[in-house]
Amino acid sequence: MKLLAGVGSFTIRMSAEATIRTLLSPTWLLGVWDRLRTSFWFLPSAMAAAAVALSFGLVKVDAWVNAETVRRLGWIYEFGPEGARAVLSAIASSMITVAGLTFSITMLTLQLASSQFGPRLLRNFMRDRGNQIVLGTFTSTFLYCLLVLRTVRGTEGASFVPHLSVAFGVLLATLSLAVLIYFIHHVAISIRIETVLADLAAETRSAIDRLYPERLGRDPPVGDVAGAYRSTLEHFESRARPIGVKGSGYVQRVDEDALMRIATEHDVLVRIEARPGRFITDCDPIVLVAPSERISDEAAAALRGAFVVGPDRTPAQDLEFSLRRIVEIAQRALSPGINDPTTALYCIDRLGEALGRLAEREIPSSVRADPQGRPRIVTSVGTLEDLACPALAAVARYATGDADVIRKLLRIIEALTQKAGPRTRDRILALGQSIERASRDRLSGFDKDAMATLLLAEEASRPPSS
Image (cartoon, rainbow, N blue to C red; front, side, top):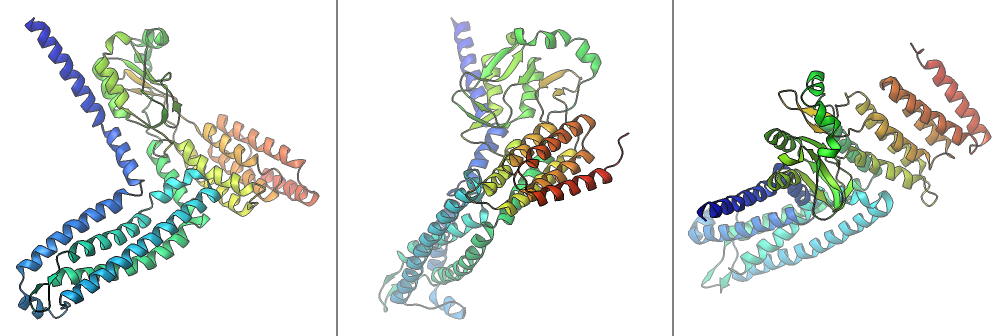
């Protein structure tokens, strides 16, 4: 009986440990931090909490410092109780009014961005540090003055006036005025298409640098694959255990280091079935693990903890989503209701920048090995053709009647073929030829002549194939 009790307590302890490790995994913490910093309440709430602590602290300092010391500091305002109440009340009432105005302008900006650029960009506007700091400054100043106001008591003859606290409230009001001016400028800049695309391009570059060339490692030595693990790879499907998650949503992050550690500890091979950006349900496995008999329930829980699943896609490890947001802006600009081909040209330039950067990178292997050269993780890796062809085709689908946009697309395709490998080059060239054929019937006469001239010039400048 004692043995059974010991085994039971060990199982409970192992389950609790697996749960704690899952909740406190670096990937889970990164997911929580990403949700906090993209929320509109976290930073203002933190600034409001700091204002509360500051109000209590400065009032304590005022109670410790006598009035004579305050008079020696000539730069501090000296108020009676009524004057202090009037100043703090004026600052508090004006700050809450301005905070309401700021919130209204922000909501209007979000509505404009959603209708003009697409709802996928609301995430970028909501996580904008400038907007969060502005709203936090106004609410913090209001809360600070309100809490200091409650400490002012007495009459002109016998009273307690926190002179330092009131002076700091005036300083916060001055700072809030400067922040209001900044906010007006910042809103006007943030809704410009050039600013939006520059931010998206920066996120895309960051994703490319993070995912390529070191995403899931390189091919293991051929000898190891053909030797001890050859049977595992050949009969993987029949020996694998599928592991899923509860609920549904999009895969946002994958902790590759945690997967490698678990696979090495249990001597198994893990195949990732759900890459970042894929939508999964209860019925879909996120990983297949073989041999299945080596994976306990605790290890399965740890494998689930290496994945972050949320209600929407995020650009952290999802390069396709980063490109898709730029494509969506171009498609909206080319729609008949908006008819803004210049914006589409800007988007194609940013797509060309991102895809050109990706073309210069080494595509990682789909297999990652441990230090002994044994394969531990298998996944699918997005190549240049997998990302470039759908993105460019999605823009061309709406642009076949616009000569300027088609010419820009063909230039981007021509530039990519100079950097891509032979197999990718053929697919991208085939896409360019399809776009040129599809647009030929819809262009007017002078546009056809200009397109033919462009194609002849690019054909003449193209280096001869070896």
